Image 1 (cartoon, one colour):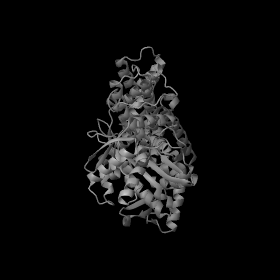
Image 2: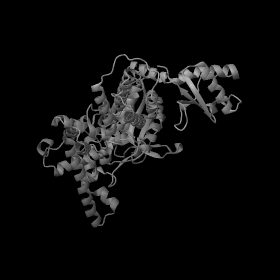
Image 3: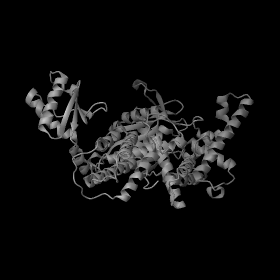
Length: 592
């Protein structure tokens, strides 16, 4: 399918070659601004680097030439260095037919020769359930993976499960001391929720021990280090790394509880993974890399036995890679995981780490260390840094139990969708089961859209109530428009072949022009790793359609060709909405 700019560019190039003896192939086009007549605008200023001419006069000359040489251009006007071109209605009617004839319009088939792009997201700790912050992480990573696939990139969706370390041992110690043999079955709690409760309990009891030690004359720093619970957690970590069977068995049991809980949450959230990595495996490979770095004098060992790298010459600082007792840190396992992933995906063309901006420095250090260790693919690693999710009452803290649990939030979203839908009273005749499914679809769509419509770099203040709104820039507004179109199509199905009309309304033309932008938006969103571009494109499309729907009759149109054209246009809007929303992981119901 040939874009309008592709029709015009050869003609403009021919004019410039003939009249100014310059060769051009690429021209800068943009949509004509609303306050001016026209459909597409040529930026004449960009030509002046090679042509000595008055921009307005040059624009007039090119405009006159196009009107004479192509039937597509019906009129033009020049505003300073901008040539605004009006395009015949028939061109856009033909473009709609070509869009309809293009399978999966805007999405590009996978190009194997591009290699594999890995997208990492979620990557939870096995000491607590997933919370609101994890939701943004999962939705963002999953959507970026879908967008990259739509742009023609082979993608592997992956995560690293942080299943070892001092924080995991804290939950284990608290369960041993206070759990009294509690299990998910005996308590009726999801496994991740149960384990998370003991992580909170550890922090509560640890603070009590610190306060007692301070009262006895210890400094706060001494109290934190000498608290019995903390000493027990440190010992458990050493025992785990030494392979002590009782500790390892407890670790496997409690992690198993957590994994079962995570699986339920992921399924409800609608995200999935192609590969899983575990820190308990990759930290060993990281230790091997550290030994190699020591042998090459890239790393160094301090007197206490800890291993470091000095990055001060690169504008960073010294970074700990192994503690003095030989236990690993986060950086250790991240080094090992990166190497293992490259080994598992030798055609890897890039790797996207979806991690909050609190870890910006960590990833600068990680990528630099890998580069210093001699891995050329380190240049293809990218940190998709995103802003935190704020709540009206402040920042979430897992160890204090002040988080918004992901499962609880999804239930709340469904309940809010049910309340608002019932108030609107448009679900007569639906069974209770169908209503429940619809509420989940609307609630989850509201949650996903609210989070993904925001540029990843920006912080979000999450408000569940305003996200479930059937008007404005929300998921339910887009879902409702899609359902409205499905209602039209049930009354008047799309015809396989219709006559090409020669006159269309400006609102119809605006919709077609927006549809034609979809392929470029997909590529731009992939290049910027930004689902927000897809979300806001979809919202603009819905606004254009609703303006059309409210002002122009579709089913009431007496002219058959005009009526069929409008039905086809509505259908194509619904098709693009379905495709764009699928990139955000949002389902569109056929009835609301």
